[in-house]
Amino acid sequence: MTLVAPETGRRVPELLMPAGSMHKLRVAIDYGADAVYCGVPRFSLRARENEFRLHNLGEAVAYAREHGRKIYFTVNAIPRNSKLHGYLRYLKAMADLKPDALIMADPGLMMITQDHFPELPIHISVQTNTMNYAAVEFWRRFGAKRVILSREITLAEIREIRQRCPDIEIEVFVHGAICIAHSGRCFMSNYFGNRDANQGACNNACREPYQIFLKNPRKDDAEMEMISSDDGTFLMNSKDLRAIEFLGELAKIGVDSIKVEGRTKNDYYAAMVARTYRRALDDIYEHRPFDRSLLTELEKVASRRYFSGFLTRGLEERLPADELNFQNEEGDQRWRTHAYAGCVKRQDADGTAWFELKTRLTEGDTLEVFFPGQFESFEATAGKMLYRGEEHGVLSGGIGEVAMKLPFPVPPNAFIARALPVTPAL
Ligand code: SF4
Image 1 (cartoon, rainbow, N blue to C red):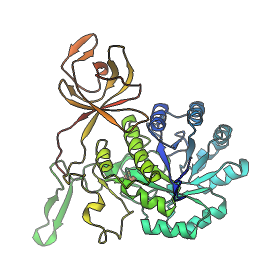
Image 2 (cartoon, rainbow, N blue to C red; image 1 turned 120 degrees about the horizontal axis):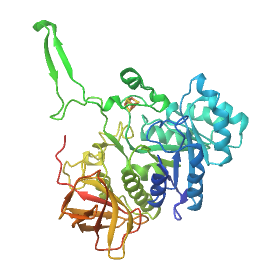
Image 3 (cartoon, rainbow, N blue to C red; image 1 turned 90 degrees about the vertical axis):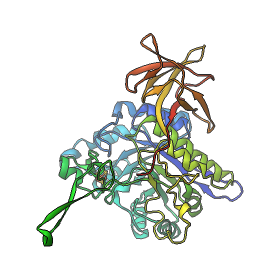
Image 4 (cartoon, helix red, strand yellow; image 1 turned 120 degrees about the vertical axis):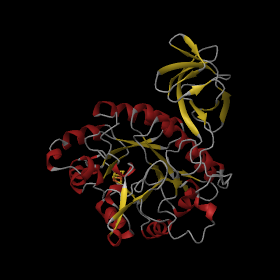
């Protein structure tokens, strides 16, 4: 559903959200996604924490169609010979559901797909590391409908690719975790855990703390430990991508789709990221300037600190420091401001809302409640909670379903977050 801004005639990119389960897919759509992507573990790059199988992909397509959204199936693993024999059966089942495209990385699987289902559009996955206009043109000649550009690419390079390749759709990652290695070229997970990242089984070895020692042969090989913070040494743990302030630029360039990473992230992430990027895209559509408070909105769901990835490479000297988004709008160094407390399942007539408790809640905590389909959020104060028939003033996350009265009506799939005290920067 690519919108065209009425006065400028400019395309507003599609907001493409990840879906690792039916619930997350519904949440992403209800909170503003134009399109979603999902896939079965055998051929997509999410082998773990992925509830989709051939039997429930149809439900995903039906929900997307009911809401007028697009849906793409990820088939972007790089399979070994042994996996190929089952591919046709999977392919036929997926093609029968008529997704809007398959997201693919392996040339062999693409060839088989084109041979059997030439009408099925192919989007070239980020795993192919498409870095330049010649590679984009190569994929256009091959017959691809869209290329998802490498995450290691700059705004200037995207602009040149768009100018030189006007006849193919372009998709750019704007939010989520990024690899410390070139996407699709990392073997750390294979080495440390015998789990192949290119088969969707990455064990996130780069996120682990490591002990690193330096030896000085001139000083009796004395070892000195390198320490990056009190929490440990996380030298390979990349910050997360957040490029919301560059959406206007990407829209001007003519990017067709902006993509969010995170099929294994939780439903709160799906809701918060979708609602915030939806707002930014709607602002572009309505010709409103970028609202810097949206940077702060995304701190409500941060897992790590943010940066703008490779997009702004080369711009550092030209942009004032605060344009590079390392701080929130007050200029302080917080990186996460809220904890996910629960997703509302239902609300009784007396205002009691029922949800699975995800974090510790104490009576008197400040809460923020987010609704599907609207950007405005509401504040509340945590009251007593009902758990297994008894009232509690404090409960820990992970115990299951609890109930708490809220002073306003809340729909199913509203999200409750607890405001955190300011967290100092690492
Ligand atoms: S180990 Fe880290 S860098 Fe390597 S594929 Fe996994 S997430 Fe990416």
